[in-house]
Length: 253
Image 1 (cartoon, rainbow, N blue to C red):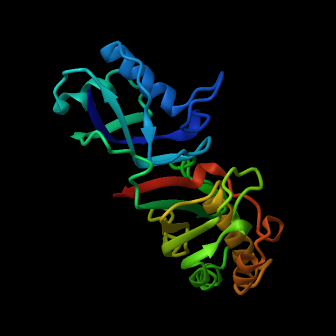
Image 2: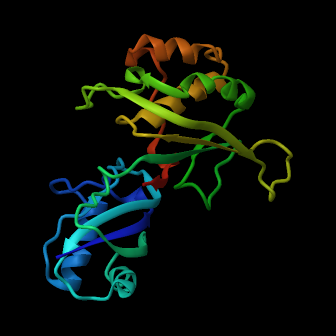
């Protein structure tokens, strides 16, 4: 048996998340189906982590074991021919039998994109959250430093989580902005939150973003992020931001 590791990307708009679910179309189902069509094997695809319905991935990492003798350099082309167009395998390699995409992951980086403009961008509508009114980016930035380091992120986790330990470490939390060259308004049109950590709780990034949006709207002061973090109470944080703006950017091993 060979253990194969892949880097894949996908547009999560049409899927009920990564993990297989009864009577739902998921990324894992599509991958396992593609492997079956290629080799006749029923495999279990392991990912670095489960993305929710509507969430995307630029560089998700997966692995599975196979008895197929297909050369590793041919796997991506063969899989892509059997995958829908919104899922693409980019790299493939044979790894040690002990490699496990989730357990071996050391860091993950997510990117959440907000379009802060009167009208949505038709070309990016599936990959960013449209916020039609002004957001105070500097206030949002001011709220970020308290999130760095090791903390209990209970306030930024859905109450439906099955994780008992809610302590995670964030290594980087930063915000990037850009203007829309086509509109040439000179205003910030796109805001990206880049966040890297050793792991993330269910909906953690989206709840952080929902809280940041309220700060950007002037509904909360930047200092409120620290208070919410220390409260360890989901009801103190903002709403869960929409899934479409979230992308799993990369995974480090």
